[in-house]
Each structure stands twice: as C-alpha cells, then as structure tokens.
Image 1 (tube, helix red, strand yellow):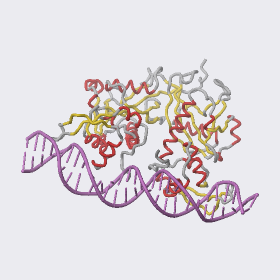
Image 2 (cartoon, helix red, strand yellow; image 1 turned 45 degrees about the horizontal axis):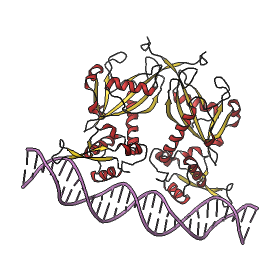
Image 3 (cartoon, chains in turn green, yellow, cyan, red; image 1 turned 90 degrees about the horizontal axis):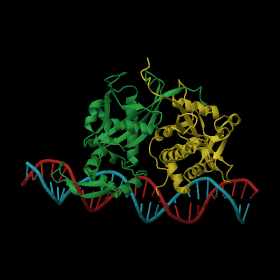
Image 4 (cartoon, chains in turn green, red, brown, blue; image 1 turned 60 degrees about the vertical axis):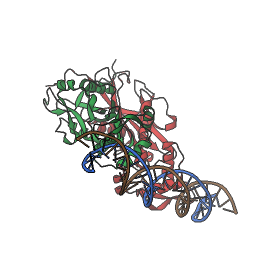
Length: 230
Length: 230
DNA sequence: ACAAAAGTGTTGCTCATACACCCATGT
DNA sequence: ACATGGGTGTATGAGCAACACTTTTGT
C-alpha cells in the first residue's frame, strides 16, 4: 500500500560538469543536443535518474556514455530546482562535477554525442540553467582545490611540476611564483620523482612525478593551502 | 506536449538538520513522528517538495512549520538517493542543515510535532537514513565553521566571548586556549563590544558583543582559520 | 578573604613570501 | 654560443601557539 499517494512525483535528472586540462587551459566537455527540445543547442551532458539507481550511479552512467570512462573523480555539487528551469516539464537536477584526464577521453564517442572540449573562458550560451551550473562548479572547484589536492585528477599518471603550476594558474587565473609553489608542493610528500623526464616542452627536460597514493589518500581530505593568501 | 513521457517520476523530499546551542552543548531538533510509517519513531523534520516551490522553499516552509522561524541560516547539504532508503516508496531526499538561536524557538509548536532538542552526543536511532544525514551534517558544519564565521548564527544577538569559546569547543570537541582564541576573534573585526555585561555566568561579568553586520557580510565567504592546525 | 570566571601580553618559532641566479640541452 | 625553460636557496616578516598572572565582584 502506498502511503504517500497524495504527493506529486517529479522528474529527477543529473547533469555533469566535466572538467579537463590539456596542458594549457581548463576545458569543459559540452554536447550539442541531438534531440528536442533545444536541438542543436549546447548543453551539459545529463540524464534522468532511473528507478533502480542512485543519483551517483546515474551520473556515473551518463559520464561513461559520453567519455567511456569509469572510476572518475566526481563530486555532487548542488541541486537545481527552480520549478520552471526546464520549460517542457518540471525537472529537478542534481549537478555533479567531474575531473578527468583529458587524454583518456575516447574521441570516437564524441561523434555520437557531438561533444566538444571548450575552453572555460569561452563557454557559449547553454540551455536552461546550465550556464549557472557551470559558474557554480567553477566556484566550487576553486574552493575545494585551494584546500585539497584534487587537481591531480586532471593530470595523467605521470606529470611534471611545471604542468601542475600551469594548471593551478589556469584554475585560479593568477600567476604563481614557481619557487614557492615548488617548495610547497614537494613539502606535502604527495609526489614521487621518477627517473625519466618530459622532453617535449623544454630542452632541459622536466622530471616526471607520480602521486604517492598512500599520502594522497591521507591528505585528500586535509587542508593544505595551495593558494597564497592575498 | 510532454516530451519526457517515458521517464519515471520520483518523490522528492527535503529533510532538515536543525542545530541549536543552549550555552552548554550543541543540540539537534528532532521530532517524534505522529503518523505511519514509523509512527512514534524519532526523525528529522522533513516534507515533500511541492509542485510550485523550489527545494529551498520547501525546506524553509518545513522549518517554519516546526519552529515558527523565518530567514534562518540554512544550507543545502547533500542529496540522499538510495533507491530503498524509504521502504514505502522511493523518495529522493535533499538534506539541509540550519543554524538557529535556540532561544528563539517557539516552544508551543513543539507539542504539535512532539519536537525536542537532543544533545548531539545522544542522538537516538532515527528512521530511514536520518542518522547518516546527521553525521554528514556534523561533518559539514565542522568543515565550514573552521573557515567561515557561521557559528554566530547559533547565538543570540548579544553574546559574550566565553560563550563563543564554549560553542567552538562544543562543535569541535576540543579545548581551546582562551587567550589565543580571543585575540584571533577580535582581530577579525567582526565583533563590536557593548557597554553592558552578562552577569549571569560569572561574578565579574563578561562584556556583551554584537556582530558587525558589514564586516560579517564581507567575511562570511572568506577563509578565516578559526581552528588551530594540529 | 576567597573563590570563580574574565581579561590581558610576551616570546619563540614556523611558515609564507619575495626575490635572482645557475643548469642542462637543442639548435 | 645562445636561447629556452627547469631547477634551486636565502632572508625577512607575519602570524600562530605556548604560556601565567591580574582584575572584578558576589558570597
């Protein structure tokens, strides 16, 4: 017997703000909708929560459909629930942001969804309240990454310190002192220097580092203060 | 024409974790359910999101029903969406936490809902996943309050520094050095000393302070570091 | 006079910032 | 040899933590 019979049921969706980093700038993975409403308009990737899955599972499913990736760093962001946000029918959307290594993105799937990496600074007009979602995600990413070492999720397994520097500079739109940044970073004990160097971006070559998974798990939830206080 | 006709609609609820402080310890406002299912069991205050309100409005409505209070500090916490969390019918719940001045709580309403302030350390078994919600709220409150001056929302308009100290000690379950805490607090410029003293808790009496609303609005979103680093 | 809580100051140390030069290598 | 980006060290100052005594007043 259903006890809640007088209540209204609503559509519940998830939308994913997918961040990627190509070594130069932060990007978002957007799609051009292949269906009505708003066909051909730019949009975040989303989907409805199905009867037997949690919203997290729905977001993971959507992400896998679009990128082919599983076990991605993903965090619940915020619920967007304006009654008229979707003009077709009221839909409550749970927004998630994800951080992925852009090079792992499976390009072939891009065609099916007409997906594209767009620089965060040149995001077009998106459908519904998706632009607002992106703004919130940017803010939350900055907030979280100032205290926790999550931006490594955007980098490949092996990365160089100049790369991380560029990443932080991109996320916060600031210029950092490489000497101080370097010291701070190494003092966390998060990085393990490798024997080989990346010779693509300089003649001298920059040492590769990997994350120390042990330390990483310990410190992901502790405060680290990566960004200098003004 | 409805385009989303093949999708399943779900019940969407809000649940409120309501924190209060009585000068001694942190408390939660819980109710004893007056209806089935789980009649007479302890529970958070909640309600369904109605067709023409946002989830925030639903939470504010629920909060007003229970406490008579409006314009309360409230923050969206997290969505709880396990398919079986409510055994009657699948319900997605958006959890909010609220901070209120316990003395403003209208006691008469308590009877209608059989509500009670319970010390955070003695929370009974609650229905569904509400205990888990409480744990998450506690964590989030600690996280946020370590960096932002939100705990003032739990205090009356006029409060003393020893009171705030006790509050912070209660929230974090630690003992703080009153000299350092004092200095840190005053250096924020958030407080305005009043002429009168609270003589209830000591013979000497402790000066009342009020919040400097201007500074407060500026600093509520900046990092302040109230809790000493280990 | 004494008990009980409020209020205040100093010092050492850690950590963040500011800043400039040498290194390795491909051309 | 030189241009390019990588890597390192030091000195200064701000802010945090550790710590103990005086003040006020009700009983």
